[in-house]
Each structure stands twice: as C-alpha cells, then as structure tokens.
Length: 453
Image (cartoon, rainbow, N blue to C red; front, side):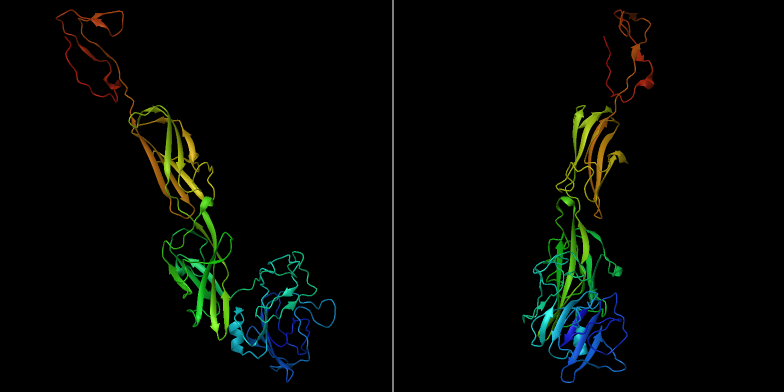
C-alpha cells in the first residue's frame, strides 16, 4: 500500500476497520493500492481516495473522525492480537494542506524529490545505506524522512534482526507506471529481447501503462545500466543523446560490452523519468530489464603442428599424417584449453569441407588419418550464442602417391642374367623394353626417353 496523507492515516481492510467509523465495502487484499486520506481539522471530516477514485461512505463523500494520533501498521487501541496491518507499506507522505485529486493522481506512482513547504515528511523506506533491502537490519530503528524536515518515524515492535519478509525492509514488488522494453524490431514491443550480440542496433521504449504517448512537458529521462550487478550508473552511450525520449532506436556500434573470459555481460537497463511539478520533482523508475550482451569472436586462427611426415614446400605426399590442430583467438573466452568451451560458445570442425562432429567444441585435437589428394583442410566455425559465426581455415596440398608398374625387356636377343630385369645384349643389336601392365602406371611424372648405345 502506498499512502499519501493529509494529517491522519486510516489503515483498514475489508473485514477489520479501525480509525474512522464510517464503513465502506472495498476489498484491497492481495494487491498494491494507493490510498490518500484528506482530513479537515476544522470540521473533523475526511475524504479517502483509493487509486485516484474518491470513495463514498453510506452515500456520502466525506466522513467524520476524532483521532489525534498518527500510526502506520498498528491501531492505537491496545496490544490486541489481530490489530497489526497484514501487508506491506511503501512511500508514506504527510502534507499540511489539502491536495487536489489531480495532484494525488500525478504523484501516486513516483518517488518524490525536492523540497516543498507543504510536505511534513516523506518516508520512502528506501533509506540506503542505513538499511539493506531484505535485511537483516539490527540497527534500523527509524523510517527516515526524505523531505529534509527531519520528521523521522520510529519503528516499534518490528523485528529487523532476521530475514523476515513480513516485518523487515523488503524490495517493493509494486508495478511501476512505466515499463521498459528492448527489441531489435519496434513491432515486437512490449516483448523484450533477452540476448543480443555486442554492437547490434536495438530499440528502447519506456511505455506508460496508463497514458502511452510522448514524453510529457517539463520531463527528462536518465538511462541507467548495471553490468553484472555491480551497481547502477548513467549510461554514457544513451545520455544525453536520448535523455529527451521515451522510445528511440540506437544504431549499430553503440550498445557494446567488454565480455572478458565469460564471453558475455549480463546487463540491466532502467529509465528514470523525472517530471518537474512546481518546487517538486516526481521520479518514475521503470522495472529493470535484463539483457545478456554477447561478444563476437575476433582474430580467430587455426594452428597446426605437423608431427609426421615432414611436408615439402607446404605439401604432403598422399598417405598417413600426424598433425596437432588447435584454435586460438585474442578473445579470452576462446583461448585454449577451454574444452568444452565455456558459456554459449560453440565450435564446429570441418575436414575437407565435411563436418566431423567428433572434434566439435574442441580447441585442440590430434589428426592421424591418411591424407588424400588434392588437399587437406581444417576449418573451424565458431559462434558465440546469437553473434554471427566466424570461420578460420588452414589447408595443405596433398600430392598423389605414384603407382608405377614394371618395365622389362621384350627383345628376343636379350641375354638373361641372374638378377631379374637385368640383361646382356651383344653390340650392334637393338634392345626393346616395355611396360608389362600399362594400367599399373598411375600418378607417375612423365620423363623424357633416350636411345641407349
């Protein structure tokens, strides 16, 4: 419940009502609501607005009161069980003048800033570093006044020493007036992207759920980011270039990340929309929108160490080879020996253009199979999640192994010797030699012939 009060607050629900004696039947259970109570001390009358709508009491728009104490969360009638507020309270403000219905509505969903002579106190319950959300907060005894007037509230009978979500300072889960979407296509709003590649073009849009439209007059926007939960900072890439817009497109190369060893950055964005209203500022903060930003692979190389045989002029002869193949990059999320690769990195290996899955997601392997003509190529296709795949390739030429048959004497005047294929011939006689089986001669280099004397 958010309270915006003038002089006195009545805390009630649809079953037990304390404070003003007038009765109305409105169920406010199981949801956040804004309640504004306007009291007139001269006539002892009050009005109540629930979510900007004025309530009626037995047909009247005002009721009577006779209470002089201000309490939040517990009725002052004694320690009777069941008189504690069963719920959460946030953004309690006390004013010393009657606020108009327009003012009540305009300020109900925002965090109040600035000084006002009409504001008595402003308890936001976001009093960092005095307390920590979701506690424990053993030293917390006050609800600090953020108006600058020093009218702090005293916490009484509240257990802040344990992790107790029913009595501690907890993060509010109330839906804000604006929500943030990030997309690579404006037509996808309000659906937000979850992952992008560093450097791609995206669209941001902070949308008012109640009043969609352009940025209202006297309003500015600060865009903040939080990398890996390290704390919120104004984004220099978005401010001041887009501080005057609720919806805009960001060109490629602006939204980037330094990924480090993980290959990605988990970044959250939010927008703070501040509207100047007289002496006051009203700040609406969007829900945080998470975006994982992955980095593309750069400077990818395939490296080889030939163990055997020794290549000649960068080429192998057809047959068995033994080669160590490795992958390298200047990106720390690719550098070996990350086996399997970390994060969302995938590695696919092709050998001679054919996918070989036994080597996938390896940054190092040994290849010891026969090389066949005309080349031996190792190709790696590396992709980091949604980023475009990157390819690196190394090739060796492979010369075919010659298969040469036999050349033997074919003349009848040749004299055989004890050694095969070795003959004698008498001077003046012709010698005839030939291929015994011409089909056995494959991949042989042609050579010139000459007549023997």
